[in-house]
Image 1 (cartoon, rainbow, N blue to C red):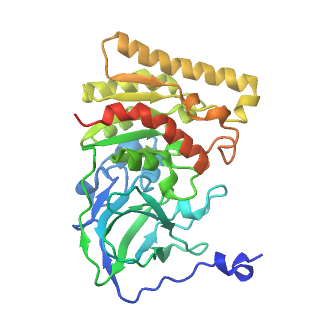
Image 2: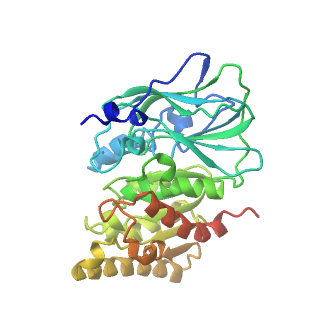
Image 3: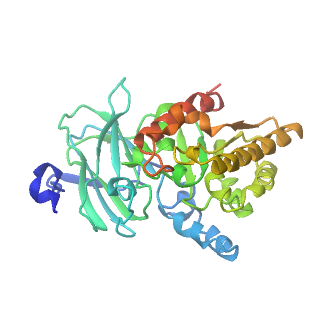
Length: 365
């Protein structure tokens, strides 16, 4: 069945490009965020180019590929434009079986009017199998100056991207972030954003809007293995004020969770005063029905809590533990796609639960 032939409202319509001016995200007054090493490497990627050989030698080439996924990247600017378009060339076609293309390979847009809050403005809609597309993110039409926020795809590499605005529109730098510096989230597919319907619904993106802070996304799908080399990369992130470590969902089943104390010690040696929050995994609704699985996850949770308590007993006052099971009310029964990966609702509750925990770390003095 071709739904586009039956329902015209589900068609991917070509964007109207007449009268559009195209802007590069990395050129002022636009502000590019979420790529900690862009100034060094000039590439839309989360890991530095010089780490590729390091991870390859360590047998962790998967991290190099996942590092090209653009989760956490965003573009910010102010403009009087009546429409916002995006023109992009992706690294590959979208082909995930349980995550929509709008989340895997799409951009999305939020807007904020003077004195207002961020409002969702729309996703990029493109054809199945397309690796290059032009899409309208927002076409509200009004010419009041407002602030725009465009999120990059969660599970895709981006070769190039341009932002389109009305040719006669003003374009200016966005308002400064309310919180200086940045936070970072290191972890699994859940942290990367699987399986949000569009990029702005990944919980790090929700938190970035709520806290008005830049958040780097170091979620590596299926590959949060607490490598010492990864600790070294995280220690290089500029302006870092808080690091969230959420590795259980991968490190536990892969037998790597025992690396956590050494991983934390390596981070602490490089960043003596960096606040670190270790978060255990939620208990998925399907897992909760398996007593053996619950017992295993209880043990993994206890191991993480013990690692944090041992660090604190050794004099580290800047590390804390959060029980991730508190993030999904009622056991997360309706919050996942497959019993593990959150829907937008699952991400919303994760962000809501994390917000009051992160806020004290990021409150400006």
